[in-house]
Length: 376
Figure (cartoon, rainbow, N blue to C red):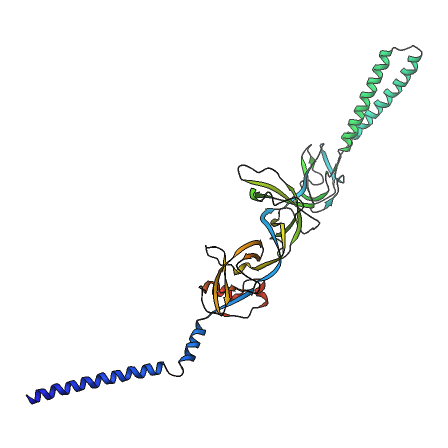
């Protein structure tokens, strides 16, 4: 009996020893976790969790309101040159790419037959003129009737018309340019037989190019003739050309809900008909507007908003936008001058996220920084 009691006491003492050891171990762990170095480690962890971002300040600049669209460039004028007579092409005086002026001779066609017809008609006119003069003298002497004189007058007039017709046919031997411009195509060679009314050249007038936009009817009160237009073409990257609104249709198409706007460009030989143009009509301008880079806008489906850095944290701020001008957008409400908006690293942010502002590079002002692309 005493032995059993002794065994129970020994086992109880052993369990108490184990429990005390566990308690002392937990206490030691707590003391280590709350030791002197704990503050530094927490700060380091917080810094490691901060999202790196790049920012841009809210600034003021002149901003323009505009309407943008795309359209191909068309020549102001284009003409197909046709022959008004038939014959052999003796000379072809111009080729593709050459500039010609209105009235300039392009082709000379064999006119031997027409020249002979002019000679015959001229002889007939001379003969009838002599007969008519004699008839007038005889009429004064009452030797011919008035009817004979009238007949001779009629025959002379008819002969003169025949002479003019023959001279006109002879002139068709020189095919001339109907407009000034550049030869775009040639369908004739020396020695070819030319058919009447067959096209042999195409001339385009490149002194002024035009582009036509079909603009939604909501813009009809904003776009007026004379407004400035900016043009860029894919074939000439990095260059911007200026033009004006030339004509505005006052009628809205009922089917499409658009109206036609014709834009004119001229004076630059680099532009060619058929080039694809990206067009921007500047119909209003506001000076000293509060603006931010377009890339600062959040790309979600909610109302327009940006992240503003305040006290080391990203704060989502709703904004009211105004004019939109290329890489810049106007902010009517929600921000003040000097606010720093996040332009790179937005995708990793939430409202209240800790941020680490990186130094901006010169390229950051004009394009999306590399860090923004990495973060997004």
